[in-house]
Image (cartoon, rainbow, N blue to C red):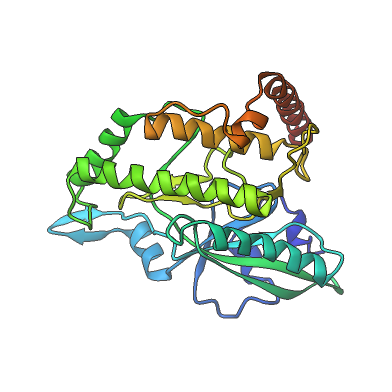
Length: 295
């Protein structure tokens, strides 16, 4: 019996190439991405030649190297079972909101597609995404990332000669901070105008690229924003709206090196001390529930 791909806790290259909508023989090697989302199975798409070099090594200037096979794309297979195509298109519409409001260089581009999925005589449709792979350093809002850390990161870029823009460390830091400023303005506009917010609170959802960009890579967890007293939860029970706005406020303080305006509409509502205390309790409840589910 073949288990539904959406229900598998761990998937492999073999699982992917057995899917009815994957061409055979395959042109790519699929490798499990180290981070698996709550909503998607995530696999790296690799060039077979790069995998051979990684496993067998290659000689460069007389030295044997084992270069890591960099993904060409990221394949996402949604775990959600949609009741209708209307629900699928609503999910895709949320991604389009990100594309509308955020700068084009600040999120991982993705091509969403719907496939006819067959297994064990069953038939259903699945939403998938073929997403841009973004290389860089994880930007975790909940860790201390200030100006000094940025300087160290971009200095390392120059030392390792990954600086394709040929900028100095100071120039890269300045470029990145301008990108962050524009990114935060765009996020706030999206929240206030469209009443939607992406998940900026996840530990690996934002990336600092070697070229000095900030990029959102989790583009599929987009939630409705409620400005009322009730704290909204996503479909997994996490207060993603409040935590994402809190994360944005932290980035604004740390990366732009300026105090936030507590009288600003968003912060006045979502950074209210009593509300934040309630959000913290809901967050703890979510993590306890997640531990029980995984145990």
